[in-house]
Length: 248
Image (cartoon, rainbow, N blue to C red; front, side):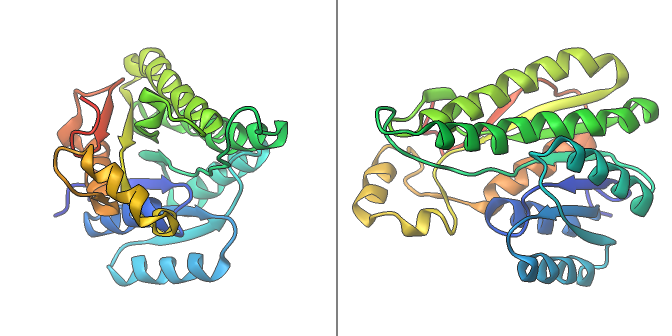
């Protein structure tokens, strides 16, 4: 029996990076996994097979959660296909980095829409069945940048800080219905995106991390498993930093 046996989870942006690790860890812990992808159909199909091979029901949906109607349609499809919804992981996100003086309105709007609005859209759609069932766990993947800020990432930091305020508000609103809402704030995690960084930049980052290493996607996924499981049944409205002690 896994920590998530019998639970149905929906994870956005799961075709790569942290989202993919979360989906795999959830399947290993016994959850039925619905997930979304947007750009890569091949990666989405490959993940669906990989999850199914772990012995759980799994299905990928090509869906853009930043579009309000698509988020509603997605949740309805998951309810039809799986028969319920216990956990939502709002993981989909993008970056469009640049100094504020050079940042375009489009770069600002895209990041806020994909990172923050999609979180609102999917949570709003998902709480209806959760309120009916009087149980649910919503987990929002934010970032340490949403806590500390970061030069060249005003749009990303604002979107991730917004997710934290949203998380705390949802926890206050829905606690009486036995619905929990928490956020996970990863620090410097090695993914496809960080692989493109200058090694000297990475070296500087590592100097500021007490554990003296970058995090792995599984380090984040394990925290998300915990918050989705009944082991965290009395935890709500919190931001769990998975950053090796970088922000203390």
